[in-house]
Image (cartoon, rainbow, N blue to C red; front, side, top):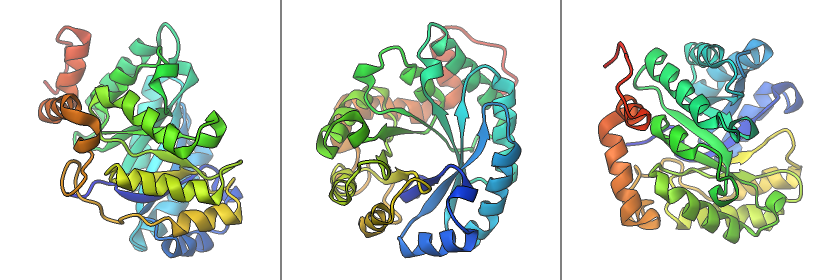
Length: 289
């Protein structure tokens, strides 16, 4: 079974700073991309971000690309954020990615994440595929609510920006996978294609992810990537339609270990609403229950 995060993807933040639409789509196919992740909201605001998503979604899907919608979460207007996600789905998003960072590293971070998860589970269709992206190394972000986001999301997209963090791709990938294994979700790492990330490092990141059996990778972001970095992303060999999590040779379950397998199996069985109830320690009044 193919999931929308499988294969090789590229992130788009500001479409008008990335290039002409037709050129982006042609280049995406030439680069062997499986899909694009386009920003569609910021907090509870859609506005121009939704407009750029609408411009991209239809033509990209016509070319056979998967189109994901992503937005930054502040956790201060949960209802507005979920409505923005609904709008992206109405405009053709194949899946959603929540970008949650500093605003959740607070005393209220866990509760904010749970409230977001509750509203998502109540208001969005149950089959909606949702991922979250955040800090790659949990050991350095002990207050971030990884467990809470993992309770209602289907995949984690850690921001493995090795050069920014001062690590090699090998160190960054290894540390990220080790830190995330306890949460039991499939991992589809986000690589660095801006700043000081070298062509060789981009290639190594892709090869390492493939060697670890990870079914999907992506690179952030198109508008800040140099021509050499874009070419490196294009040359990065990656299966376009990888096998489902845990299937085939060197599946991801071989990386996360037995404990992670069991956690993942449990999460897949119970579904997001049951997982949120477990975290609350009680049974909230939910119309879907």
